[in-house]
Structures are given as structure tokens and as C-alpha cells.
Length: 323
Image 1 (cartoon, rainbow, N blue to C red):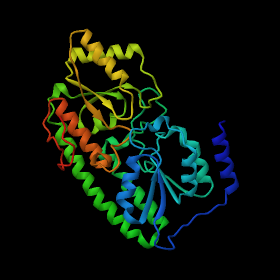
Image 2 (cartoon, rainbow, N blue to C red):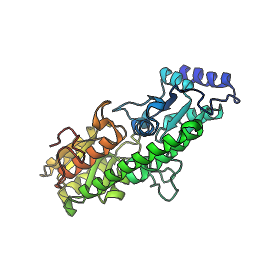
Image 3 (cartoon, rainbow, N blue to C red):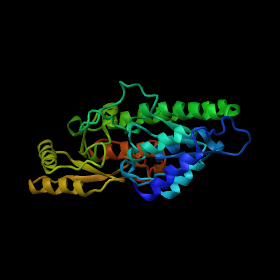
Image 4 (cartoon, rainbow, N blue to C red):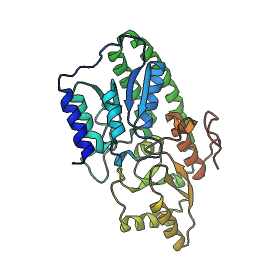
């Protein structure tokens, strides 16, 4: 075990299993919240507003499947009053850490825990694991608004109604986003509704919005794409005349480039349609750096690259102009 891991677990042991943290907000200072990925942090921000102070562990462009907590993360986690993470093994390297912190008495929540078992898709490679990329289906991700509102309300009862009102308002925004994504993907000609991406992060998107999805790697980027699988994808691209394939902001584009070269060697030119946000959102402070902007960008870019019609600046007119 690495030195920083030993030090981290030693700190947890010193805190003891009986450690109890604030159950009710006793003053007006913001609640100290740690969230793992941007998609979770953004919902917490929408629901908690000025009543939360959020530290996000895993930034834009960073792969959560492979992420290991740093010494600074340990400090943030130990100083948090509430910890929110996505769950379904998205933050695979951090699962034991969250379990230990929860046993120490802190409020730790996986925001996908309220999903019914029948909703979750299975990992196509490892059937024992659920696909964690729930945020790709806006309807599925809507459940996190209530989960986060309930968690904040339980922690801070005097402001419970505020959290629930903001969650309801954000839920309405997500309903409009969901409708836009559904209508936009439907404009792609049926024969071109094939989404080929760097890894298998878009199955929920495909199920919800009616597009076939094929990833080069599995749902975790720890899995490597074999040559045989790449060759099968090249065959499909050539046979079905796929117009464009996509790279992802948090995954190496090496394998996508291999598909492009493979198709070219067989006489088929396939474009790289652009960069999708899969396991992380856009740059902080940008519209694409919000959950709504992330999905707006993805749906708009996919539709335009595959022959559909979508406004270049998305459904709210806030996107950086797309090709």
C-alpha cells in the first residue's frame, strides 16, 4: 500500500467510528461539500446555491475511472460535512475510501442510489457491473436532484424547503433539455443514427434518444480495445457508411484515429465529428462546464455531424458555435 494511502487510513482510524458531524445547520455559513465529478457538483450547486461551498475532486478532462485521490483530496474529504459521489463504480479507485469515511460517521451519498434496479444497464464486458454513465440520460439524472435535495434537507432542516424548491425548478430545466435532446437526435437520418465513440459511455444516451451506440473501449477506460474489436468497428463503419465518429474530452483519441486510418485504408473517408463530453464536463466557468451545457453540446454536435439539423449554438443559444 502506498504511503499516502496508509496515512489516509490512519487519519480515519484516529477519528474513530463514533465521530458525529453536524446534523442540523447551526448558523448561516455554507455547508462544506465535496463532490467527485462535475456532473454531481453541478446538481449540488443548483440545489444548494449559496448555502453550499463545493470542492470538486475530479476536474474537467480527467478520467474518473482511473482517478486516485491525492493528499490534497484527503484533506478536502476529511474537512467535508457532506460528500456526494456518483456511484455505480464510476469512481472505482475511491470506493473503499468512501466506505471508510461513511463508517467514521460522515454524511456520504452516492447520488444514483435511488435508481430502481431495472433502470441500470449492464456493463457489456462485465455483466456483474452496472453501467455508471447515468447522466447521459437526462431523465435518469433527474433522480439525483431529489436525492441531493433530500440529503441537504436532512442535514440542514431549517432550509429544507429552499432545497426542495430549487430542486423542482432545476428538474423543470432538465425536462426541457431532455425534450431538446430527443427531438434533435430524431432529425438524424435513420441510416446514420450510429454513434461511435472512444469508450462505451453513451449507452444510456442511445437507449433514451434512439441512436445505436458503439464504443471502442468498454464502460471503464481501464479496459483496452483489442485489434479484433477495432477491425470489426472499421468493417461496420465502411459497410454502413458512417459519416462521422467522435473523440471524448477525457479519453485518449488514439483508438479513434486508428478507426479513421483503418477506414481510409479500405477506401472510406470518415470524419471526426468533434469532441464529446463523456466522463467530465467542459471547462469551469463555461456553459459547456455545466451539466445542461454538456448534454446540449453532445446532442447538438452528434446531430449536426451525423446529418441531422440542430442550431449551431444549441437549444439555449449558449454553446460555442459548432461546425
